[in-house]
Length: 457
Image 1 (cartoon, rainbow, N blue to C red):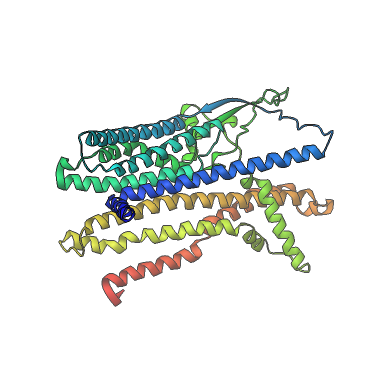
Image 2: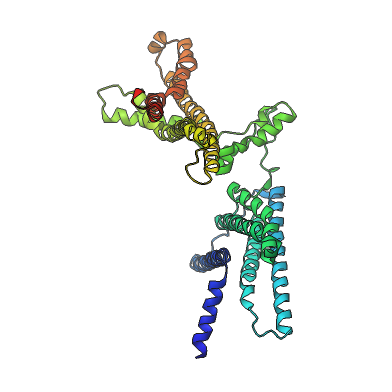
């Protein structure tokens, strides 16, 4: 009889927990298990690697040890964003510890007063939160120990999910406070309101991904004795390793813009291009496809346009996605304006229609702005790749011309090819998508006209 009633009591306790608290416990428990699994797998792999290395050292006698790297790391610079991330984790942990202590003190007082029923399961949520934020704080501090440039994916996912649960709980608690008044206030509601700013910042860092930790390498032994007076910057552009948030907001330009705001830019301030954006890389791609076309049909001259299309079609297709999405969302306003006019005239189709319409207009304009920036940037990069590849190809061809061929193609003509003709081909990237965008725009415009005025359109 005791066992079924015990199980029934526990089941009642679990079902008695609010849905959001139960979801938080499940998510934190799952992520804790995933974290422990990853740590255990890494430790096992390290142990297996050490055993294999020890066996290899036993079998290979007289071999020299691996020489350490000559590059010595210097000072490790920790940015303010990493410090704020760690402080936010510790702050949320401190809040959860206070909640756990407050709840435990209240239950101890109930037990001391002789209460027959003391619900110790109330501590489950606070204990799970404390354990989760202990792991999160230690993991964030571990990033400094290992000098990670990016926060681990599991940590970022954990921060993001915590903020989502916090927003849902804020909505539920705020609605309950509005309906019931201050009598609804409890320790968990106060803790959730207090932790919201820190969780919002951690969610921002989760989307951004960068830790803000940099290593200043000691390059004294690597610098040549004779330095050029106007040496350029040796750092690759931040665009190469930018995250999703940085690409969407173009914040990877902030470093260069901040320098330009203080003083005129110099050559050493301009970072190097990413390897995929350099003329050498694009020339190799175009040259490879050109040779493939020549090998497929040796009797005919290959098509340069077809070689360019095969070399850069992926970039053009990715850019077409932004162009098409930009075109679609630009017609959301004309399509929804009739519903907006009807709503202003007092005709409400469904509850909260005004909020839905305002949110739709705002979301469409936000997506239009983001896609416009990415579309224009992608067009510029595509044109740059085509121009750099063609310029290098014309230059290499000019070096291989014979003396007789140079009589018909002077140096001025070759320079004109690289300066004018290649530039015109590169500028074609701006008009590449007009072939299919113009019919799409006409169809959308006619559809909106047909919706509003009927067959007269």
